[in-house]
Length: 279
Image (tube, rainbow, N blue to C red; front, top):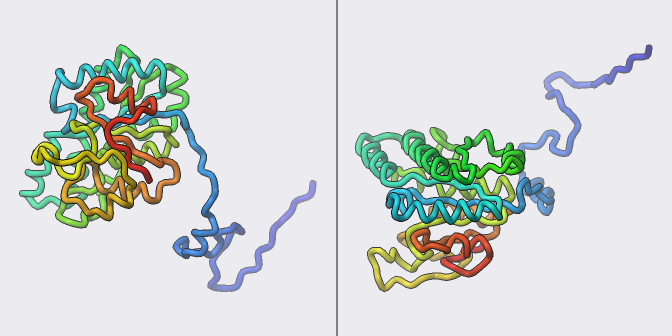
């Protein structure tokens, strides 16, 4: 029986290499990165609809707002693949207020507040149990094709996976990546068809419509245009806009009012409602 050996001639002080296109690279050279542009990224679930339910805008309003939305999403799940992501809400604000007062680092604030969207995910999955709602964790995301085949309606917390490694905020200490960002990252990972952010306003306005009744609705805008406006207040996290500019999959984000029955169905089926932000 013959045996073969690969003889590697290596000078003293040289690294052990394995031949590949990135051999010896630092992985930050711009011309190298550009050489990989244009490749097609696999879309794991191209017919998926990610629906993010706001904690502050939806969950905190209780039965009167939540139950009609649960019914609507449950019925939609019989016709469409849906992944529900949950936000935090008033308990996040309380935790942040206390943590900021005590001087907690941004990463610690992110770790503490992330637990609250998980609580909302548990409650939402139980409410959706008549439609096979099941709470899933981040580690279950790659199991979604199988779970959908089994007829499951998955619910996940929207908290992104930074935790203690949260990036420093540009202004202040509040974690810049929260549950809108988490929902976006999940949608980008899975190659989703739709990302719908369900809020308590009719979309993106020129100012906060709750404090400025004369604010005007912005029905459509690009992420870059919105970043350039540098608005004082936004209905979604600025980090989502920054990521949209470089998105490979998610080319638009829809913002709708979950207090109005039928809005989620309209957005999911391609009708114009709320605000459309394009990448």
